[in-house]
Length: 512
Image (cartoon, rainbow, N blue to C red; front, side):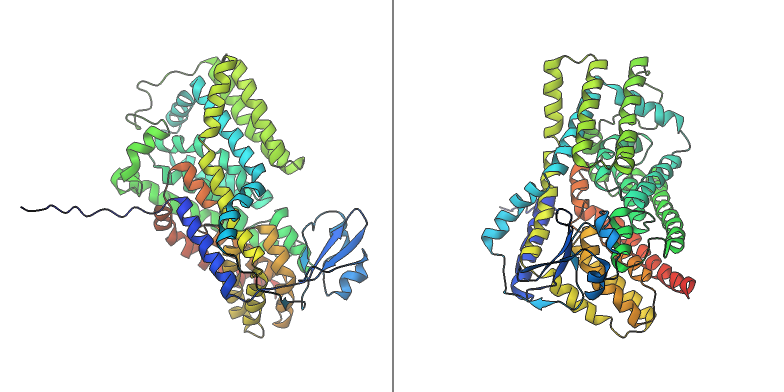
């Protein structure tokens, strides 16, 4: 009797398993890497004083005057603390010291995701409101007709969709750091891309890469380049011209990469990295039938449909305006989506009971995405509690002392890529690293804006792939596995690294 042995196909782990592996890795590092930290300086607005906290937790108050900052070797201006431009504790150069090892054991690893969820509650509520609103619009049935109408208009010019989406998201990234806010766009725009003959990966990439390339070449982003420049004692206008040039080139390279991939799969859909899942994804995103025939059986848009879709997209315009001009954050954005959902439900004549049922079901569909956000934050919690971020920074800052200027810039970018893996927060990494790294530029005869540029380049390059960032939550939302994303994006990742190095050298020449 013969046995037919069927070889099981390897299935890449889910986003949760990937994050658990990274959490375990982070916990192991807290036993291997010596624990250490820098003293930090923060502004206490209630008492109008600076508070310096040592690595061992001792605090001392100092007058909130420029002289205090000068005495601690901090080049930032006191008004930037007072007006809130610098709102996080800032590391103080030359104060690194070892502290007691605080290895994160099994209990801490299990608790970290719970703590991460608590810290991400505002983001999670925002995600639930988005899910509920999308479910209501889907229930009314206006998405299919709207998507079909857009596909009909762009017939033969589908590239325009890629270019416009990537460009607009990049503008949001470079100006106000649009990142988490893009979560709302994926369920709406991916069906548009699929209806136009592309795949889900094209939609994911057009949005996510747009955000990353915009943030990478930040111009006036207050959460990265502005706060980092303040910490370095310069203005965000220093180095701005070079970053604008880099932004233009970066967007063009990214759109070209998307065009090239899009043309390949339109010619032969089986070349899509998502081909094995195409039926599942078409079902999930509600894209059925012949995607090239946009006039066949789609329901024509009614006046009510147009009103609802207009209100739907106006919601996003209001969200962007609120974030940029009114200082909104996740609580206000969640309120906006909730109110819009109710108004859309009334216009669509959805009964109260059905509205509640559909909204809750839509929110529940996004639970997995919200949990991924909490688990990603857990990695940062383990590293913070293990006191190894400061040690990594202290060690790496020694790598670049006294280097040749060009080699200094290359190694500095690599350092920020490594640090960005562990501290994937723009403002958090700026306040941790810039006060330590900026003076090193003085030692090799380079302007400090080059350190700021290296910081935004490195952080957002690693943001393409780091599990501690936003990417796993996005992939979970769009039913794309992490291995497929890595396979698809790595050539562009190499291009971005090369572009970053070239732009740093160009900026060095412009500043000379």
